[in-house]
Image (cartoon, rainbow, N blue to C red):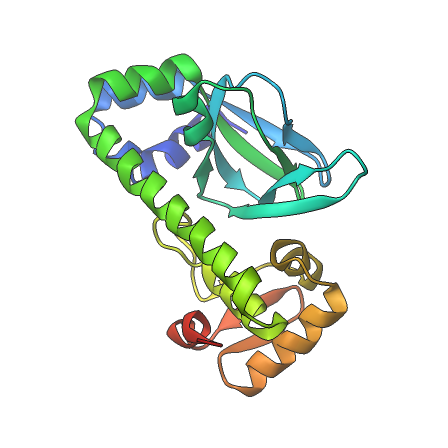
Length: 226
């Protein structure tokens, strides 16, 4: 990952585009790019939180693992998304793992840089308020879906959740995601995901292609099962 590519990524973010040139230059100079192999860990539960991360490319998930090896997925992070601001604001050890579902790269913004922006940039603070509020809404929606909806609706809401313009900017109508990855996010088997996707396709809400899903009716996916 070249410094120029990292700079282009940071400059194009919602918060980076709001910074004056001197502030952005400092962020770029103090940041770095980190590569993660498929199945590899970018962050580990219990470690000190020393950076804020944005997904340059690839696809990651945030999980927790019980002592007996069971896992639960909190959320997904496609390219363009940032995460970890809550842990930085609370200054506590990390309470989750971040795993790459495919070969991925992340932008690493050190804690000192994050805190400097927090202390000096009003636009950055406004961005964080919106980001944290959207994340809260996302987790409330996931809890509602898991407790109240059947598997078809859970898959519909899971796919629709990948198109949040605040948390996942830059997504178009096609998302490269496997049925196994959706199963991790929705908490159901790959076979059941396949059945749900066929049901949603027959309803005209999406189209299943090899290795990707094309959205036909995003509002319909968001309302499915309501």
